[in-house]
Length: 394
Image (cartoon, rainbow, N blue to C red):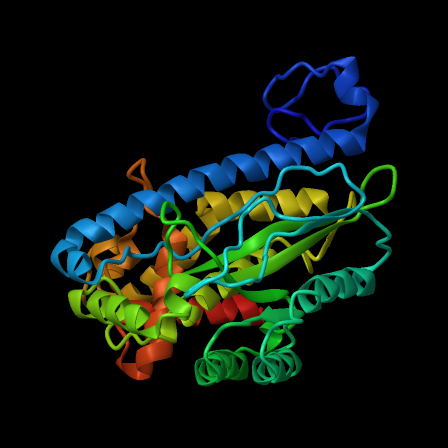
């Protein structure tokens, strides 16, 4: 049983939560699994709401910093990690997204947020088949050349499903090379990423690319709805990835202004998102959570800890502080932690709408910088990425 207010694990038949003091009613205690499900839904909803709000506020900050160029090219700056929640569905089988998928220039026919309920799911193999089926069912009208590229990327990089239907073929191949370079240096991170997909994004929620570590994709036909299938995915905004000129203008402008690391390219936003991915995997390893593809009562508590921490940024800050201490030991330069982080890029100092730093952006921008510039990256980036690599390798 879990407290439906704070999520604390309770002893059977508890009348009060021993952590927050919340009174546990008879209705709360009737169904442990239902209580867990409702609490996790509430947790994800609240964290997503907060992070989406942070994303929008940082877009406005980026627009202010480089307003003249943004007005000229007519684009918004990105806040690249993003969460999403689908409300619980009641239908059996597939539940189509309510988002419209208009056809036209710079739009995709792909729907990234279909959800399923009442599905027979016994193991990871069943979950993978369902994710693949959802992806393949949307490819009928996609060019054969793109489908061949997708299949090769799936094979090479162990990604469960890829949907780049309308993308330029050469551009899609080059995106694959980003994964190739990173997976060569970090071979242990293969197999956790489930989806790489184009997505239609509203003007209100504009971003270049987005890492979505948790997407509630499917629930089982069991009485308790366990196990749940969770997708971990990267979303590529069609407004940019189907319009290379706009993407190039945005990234070049951001790099020249110091908003992004120097030498940023149209491919490197994917490296930034993979920085978030590696940070999330390091956190999973820290909490000893081996996988989030299937969630049930055996790993629900660990899942809650990881997702909650990722929203708060505690583990990201701990990695940054460890790297900072290593830097101070090796160098005579004792600039402040925030000054040190600021040597990476302006984006590395992103704040939420409450004025608090979003520390995982520092991790992602460090990785972005090292990906682009190698030994010529900032010292802060190199020290942070070294700590990240140590956490991943254990």
